[in-house]
Image (cartoon, rainbow, N blue to C red; front, side, top):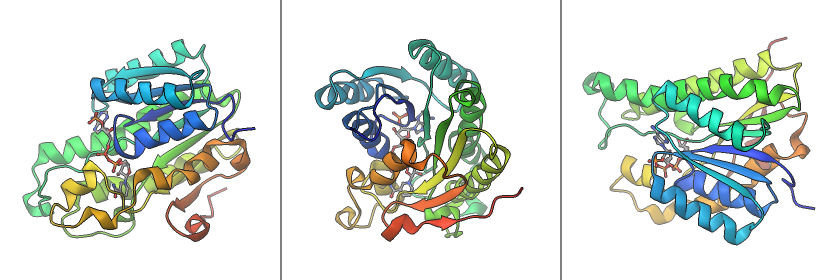
Length: 253
Ligand SMILES: NC(=O)c1ccc[n+]([C@@H]2O[C@H](COP(=O)([O-])OP(=O)(O)OC[C@H]3O[C@@H](n4cnc5c(N)ncnc54)[C@H](OP(=O)(O)O)[C@@H]3O)[C@@H](O)[C@H]2O)c1
């Protein structure tokens, strides 16, 4: 018995980095159907091929979409639900933009870049949840938002990115409180430092060897996507900490 036998999942930002590894791990753990969303079509095709190597029976749909555009979010959800016969068990809001590199201080932060980061990292997950919920409510499901330690500490230079992650932490708590009596759970994960394109752009002078391979941080996501976490609601997890840094947050009644 695999952890995700029969699950239908949508993963944003699945073209590279953590999202790519989550898609592969979900397939390996028996997911029945996976929707991959990102802008990079060629990379999505590569991920799709990799999924077929680990899970030949998985139904995969690759959707090229720019999540800064609400109409592309609508299309991504509609295409997914149509391919999945209206079913969705797991939504992973992983796609993210770091903004300009090198990262400017707020005083110098261009408005367009600020808007773009918030659109990608905050507004897109908000809309994706809104659009996916009707399909998830009936059977129950799991929403997993990806955050960062920059979402609980205001580091200089991490500007719009950090602010977007503070906001996704608050938005996750609010969704969790509002959905408390439904079968849909909302939790959020800080994956910790990983060696990905985003982190290399954020800290070009650092040695990426010190950061985890994103393939090593997928366990907590598998747990949250599986029925094992069926009653886990409104919690923050840290993928690289002991016990996943499990921190139970009181959600409002
Ligand atoms: N790396 C770290 O150390 C670290 C630490 C803490 C938290 N995180 C979080 O972990 C998650 C994954 O990050 P990562 O490090 O794996 O980054 P990454 O390698 O840069 O991947 C980011 C993904 O987001 C997608 N994306 C970005 N903008 C998009 C848009 N407008 N529309 C659709 N897709 C878009 C990218 O795909 P396309 O470019 O193909 O669209 C890519 O697949 C993010 O939420 C990040 O904030 C990362």
